[in-house]
Image 1: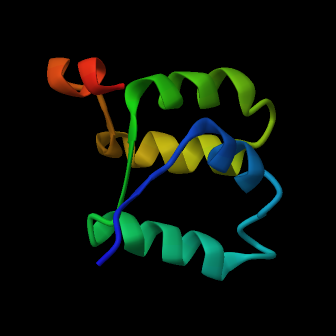
Image 2 (image 1 turned 90 degrees about the vertical axis):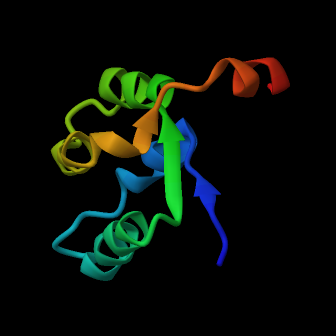
Length: 80
């Protein structure tokens, strides 16, 4: 099973996928989160909140799944 780390660009692009037009996109993204196949970092959460503009569906999704946006450990920061 693959694991994906989502960056800011992913969420910026997601603005174009309106839930009423692309429900399968949001369903599959949520399912991937439930199956622990996706994660991100706290900095991405902050960037998306600042950059998403009026795309409430993206903001609603990230706010309801805030647990995937973790703070990197010291070892992870050193590796990056």
